Length: 95
Image (cartoon, rainbow, N blue to C red; front, side):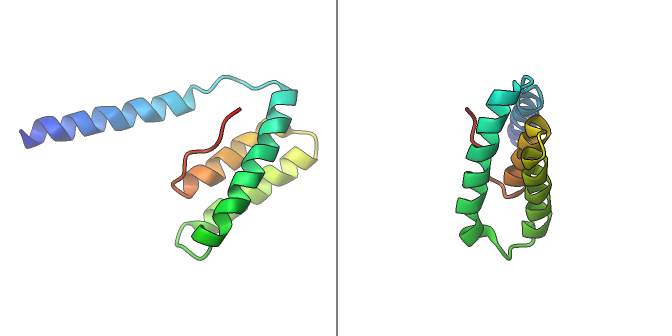
């Protein structure tokens, strides 16, 4: 019975990872909107997550995403911000 539960848990984890990786490419306008939404989400999480062991990695990904969004590369920026929020063990917002 334990093997069945472990197998089921592994299959569900793999399915959710695959679904996230298969996110379709965003238009530049959509990515710009998503940059704003993800930046707001990250900043809202900051008081609760700052100082935790995974905070620094997430903060670096957020900064990289913020710079990309500000420099006309919103698709790259939105992806970096998604990664930053995922690194905080939170599901990133979507459009």
